[in-house]
Amino acid sequence: MAAVRILTAIPENNIVTAMLPQSFPTKRDFRVGTNRREAFDNNKGGMRPKVWSSKCNTKAQVRLPLDEIAARVTEILPVGPIPMRPTRLLRVTSEDAEGHLKDKETVRKRIHKRWQEEPYPPYYEYRPAYRECWNFITLPKFAARRIHQMRANKSYLKAQTNWSNQDQDPKCQLCEEESETVSHVVNCPALEGAWTNMNLKALAIAPESPLWKSNKKGMELVRRFSSYVMKNRINFPTKLEFSPPTQNAGLAS
Image (cartoon, rainbow, N blue to C red; front, top):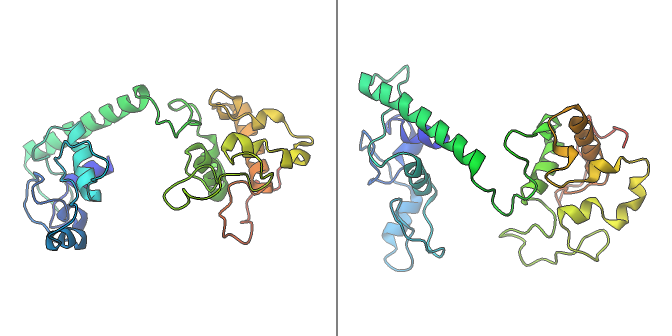
């Protein structure tokens, strides 16, 4: 929906809209140059980025960020000038106003349908079913991030690699035996002493686990799981020298 708002704004009033590719069909043609576009325009050699309308499937060539936004919106809406969004400062035609609301509702329904029906990306293994449970979001921000990052496979765990750490040793920092995945680090033998008086259901992190259910029991398990993660500094930023204060840090495990 944010992408649709960008593409339906007036370029003269929205700098992000004004930085869209010139060939993208908007109601008004005003554009401003960007450093990235100018750099590629001035560079006569080397690989250029894909244009927003490209159907090429190669992974070696990618789009600029705004071109990617334009390309993704056209997957949901037909190519053509998208009706402009009415605002307090902008008077649009009744056709534009009606068309904008219609297209906005179309986008919302299609995104909702994709969210429900399309398979999850393989890296999002621990994501729950649609609207099943987001209890951990009610936790303090730092604690919620520890959990969400691990479930999205975008964390500080050494086996959850990205472009910046793909060459590092994936072995667990605690036991130095197995890869530091979510399933391992939560049940690492080096933390066996922390399991005392712990409800082990809070350490069952499979997608179908009661931990992720949107009920009172699930909320209690999420709080205990968060307390366990915080006390044992699981998925903490590697350069962080202190433990941020959190209201859940003192919860009994």
